[in-house]
Length: 191
Image (cartoon, rainbow, N blue to C red; front, side, top):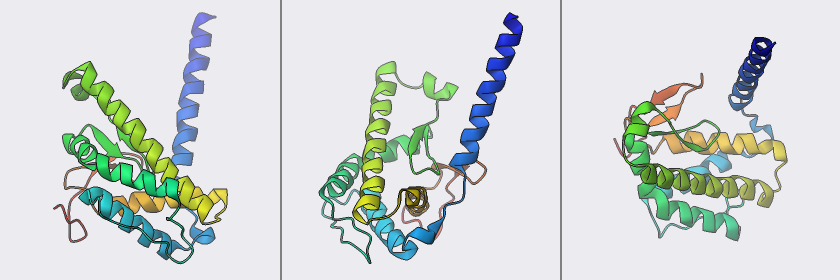
């Protein structure tokens, strides 16, 4: 009986990860948003974040509202944290996920490098970054009067625009859900 219970739990866990994978890689539906305006807004925000440009200002673009105070504060906080995020991405121990979030790759190498205190600091930074990104995505959606289903499109656009500014060799999630490396190119000012 114990083996059967373990088997059921194992199948359930595998099923949950499969379902999660399907949802996290669903194609974004841009029909409810002004895609071009959203891309312009996301590009200007991500460019300022990666440059650490504390003087950057952000304007609403064709119905995409970024002037909300909570959104502006989250952007400023991300800009001030930018060098730490870049160092984590450069270390190879983190990746940009296609759902618009930063995540630590908890590999054996990551666990060997640095102390538990270093890992705690990295986890706190990633959690803070996630909170600010969520504030930006959801704040833009609400302030722009977009339906809840537009959130996946907003997150996807920010992810795609963020890729433009990542350093060569930094990791991101590809269409199949696997780790890929930024190869640089004309769109990447850091190459």
